[in-house]
Image 1: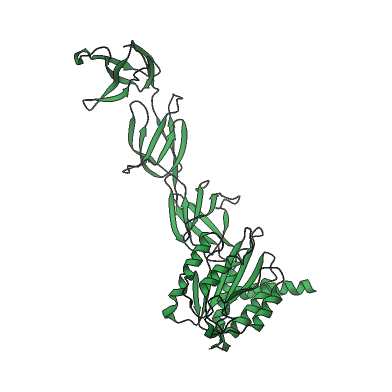
Image 2: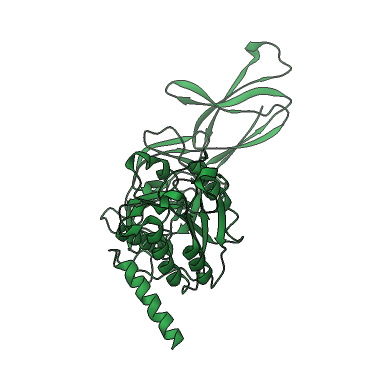
Length: 457
């Protein structure tokens, strides 16, 4: 019977959460992931002020006590309670007045409720110090650590709570904090907005709804589908790596290879809705979508144009020949592809620079959706050069009525083999022992595919 009561209580709790207007289409906490929620409560003297039905502190006590009962039923969550401004009178200006009143443990609901019952606001608001102390409130180990700050005022001890919150996030100690302002004046709201996700509420009803909405976001996971669209705007592209970055911290949060599931649809991801993301899809070239905000407890679909085709490079030679790929009208090399391989590229036009001797340049090569564009080059020939002594010289080819140097002979190597594309070449050289320029010599050679030409200099 006791277990039945606990089950009914849990169902009612989440029913309350969803009554705030968020539709749940996903399961609750990932069973492999644990979440700790630390309530950071303002216990300063101003919390005694009348508000809505009674006072701010009375409403905070009532609502937090109810929430504590519900969270205690969850297997993958724990809560803690830190209060500030509640141990010293306001006249003492105690900027160290902050204390962890209920550490993270299972079954600490009674401790939290008892601390709330006996709480009498009396001091000031050392928010920055309290946030700093929170770092040691969370037990060590991998976990989602969340702070929910509930306050009716801003920092009164000269600290910088925004800098503290950013530092805690950058170190991976906490996720972005949530701040609920209780009837805070608009003129000072900006002091709290920089700490994290801030919401100012005007009455106890909106306070309770906002707190439940935050917990609904924190204690559930949100589904995301990445649709990589082809030219027909169908989500058929797949098997591409994707990187999700935390916008605020600019660190990598997730890395996945995109998958089409057994039903033929893009696979579903479970992502943390607290974070705003930048998404980098590692096509060639890559595509990006920035400042992605997820709707909690909703199936989010992110569509990106990612139509691709293939480029196949073939050559009879097996010498590790490479090709530089550039996006048309761009100077920087986009990709280096080996010959006798196939690579996928976004649909569009590309310039190719094939690293043969001499180089082969191909302009405006089109890559089309789901098609393979094949580029084949002829087999190279081979020039074998035997040198009777040390020479200065090189191989040249004619381009636009000008001789272009293609290769410089190695000075102290007496036998060289050079792979050349079929064509007409000229060797210009001078023996080291010959001291006059007029003793420069010239030899013309013709190179054919798969043939060896041997000369002696």
